[in-house]
Image (cartoon, rainbow, N blue to C red):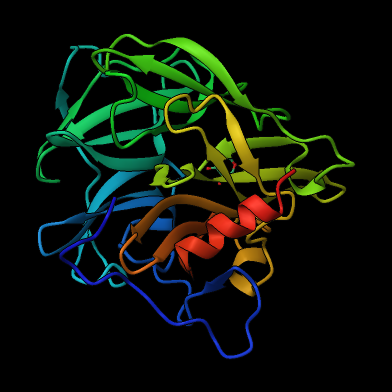
Length: 325
Ligand code: BMA
């Protein structure tokens, strides 16, 4: 969402840098041991909040149990993360079972902050919750049947309905995966499922040929919804996760207008290539300012830490249009 009041985290493009996105010079911004119990902190989501920022962080503990934790920051870079996981009260249902929670996304829609995450209910599916203050949290019905991952809400209703991207999957390290959009009148019942885009043929764009999944909350630009997403290739050494961008039709996001053939960011630095799961760049949030023409993308690095990359919104859009599959 747009950050009108608070200064965005930002660094200018380094001298001589020619890529569309550039990395924050002090990456990773959140260390794996930023709270006493954590084995790793990654794939996390942030939003403007009050006179700073709030976020929901994936912290796996030292038993490698996955859960989500609230955090606050003045500048979007230095974070104070709670030492206890979020406790949810019943929202639009009493059924708030959860074996685990991971890979949160957060957005403001109309009157509250909505959170989605990968919720353990007989396997991974999409959990939904909301908060007004990042202190009290309420859990709603799961959006879908298992198995599903990467549930990402649009930041406003489309044709009067809530809209969510998701990636139907399996109960393991899914060897496939395409992005769908679904609609709900009430954040409880979801339907009108439509395919948005599929993993690409290997010969067309290999970094995204195994599976793809939506990343941050889509950003509304003149050309439509700018959607950063992760794409995966299955190499002889395992999965490698990179990031691209697509632009979806404003009124019907099942229509893909453009989609990057080259990646925008791929695992290349030490902290992206070394960690609990090497070679992973996994975006889950973005702050942006249309007025200042800035975007800051938060991504999990090697399933271990949180890192930040910057770009000019107009350049990302231009690159996506000019380098479309
Ligand atoms: C996916 C999810 C992500 C993770 C990625 C790479 O299936 O588990 O949380 O970042 O794999 O390990």
